[in-house]
Image 1 (spheres, rainbow, N blue to C red):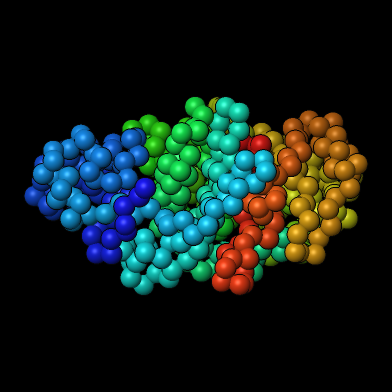
Image 2 (image 1 turned 30 degrees about the vertical axis):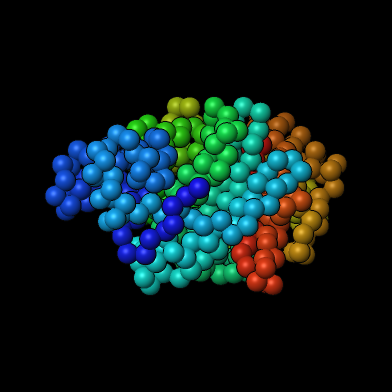
Length: 376
Ligand code: SF4
C-alpha cells in the first residue's frame, strides 16, 4: 500500500511549505511546486509521488528518484473487541533518512473509531524520561525524540489504513509515548502542518496535547499562534502525594504548575483539561477530591477522572463508589468532572496499561499512558 522507504533521498513528509519551496529551488524547479506538493502530501494524503496528479509527469518521476515519503512501518496491529486498533510502528528507517545518528525505535499509535468521529492517539518520543510511576513507558527511559515527520506520519498512516471507514471528524491526542513538551520543536513543526487548514486541516478544537506539567513548555506553548488544546496530567492532590508518583513534581511543584495554568492565555472557546488517574487507596479519597477542587478553583477547566486499569504496576483499581464520590464532590464545587473509562483494554491500548510484549520477547515498547478516548 505504501512505497518502500528510501535511505538516501530526502524525506518530504513533515516538511513545511517553506522547506518544500527551498527543496524545489535546490532542484531548479519552480518554487510554487512546493505549495502543490504540500497540498498533495497533507490535504490529499498522497503517499507516493505517482499519485500527485497536480504535478507534471516529469516532476513526479524526478521526485520519485530524488525524494521520498517515509511513513512509519507497521510491525503489528492489535484489534480490540471495542474496535480500537493499536499499531506498533517501527521508526528506524524514517529516522535514519533524516539523521543517521538517531536510533531505531518502536512506538505505538492508537486509532479509536466512534460513531461520528475517530480519535488518533500519537507518540512524540520513543520511551520517556519523565518517570511517572504509574506509566510503563517510563520503564524504558528516553530512547529518542521523534522527528516531525514521524509524528505526522502516525496520523497520515492511521487515516490511510482506515480510509474506507473514516467519519467526518478526526481528533488527535498527543498522549502516547513521551512528553510532548520535551520534544518541543518537532512537536510544534508537526502541529503546524496538522492544524493548517491547507495542510491536514485538523481543528485545534479537536487536537489535545497532554503534558506532565513542564512549566517552561506550557509558557512557550501559550505564545504560539497555532496551538492545540492543553491537558495537564495532575494525578495527585498535594505535592507530597504527587512527588511519590510523578518525580517531575519536585522540579515543577503543583502550586507553580497551577500558577502557570492561571497565566495560560486560553482562547474564548477553550478550557484546560486536567487528567486525574484514580489509583485505588492512594489519591481517590473525598479529601483528595476537595483538595483538587480548591487547586482548580480559579481555572476554566474540565477534569477527566480515569480509574486505574489493572496491569503490571503495583496500584489498585479504585472502588467504583469512590470514583463516583470523587466526581460528585468536584461537581458540587463547580468543577466540571467526567469519569472516563479507557477503551481498548484487551489489546493493552488503554491508559496506564502494559503495552506490548512483542515478538522480541521482552518489553519491546511501552504503554500508551494517557488515553481516555471518550474525552475529546
Ligand atoms: S505518563 Fe507521559 S510523561 Fe509520564 S512517563 Fe508516561 S509517557 Fe512520560
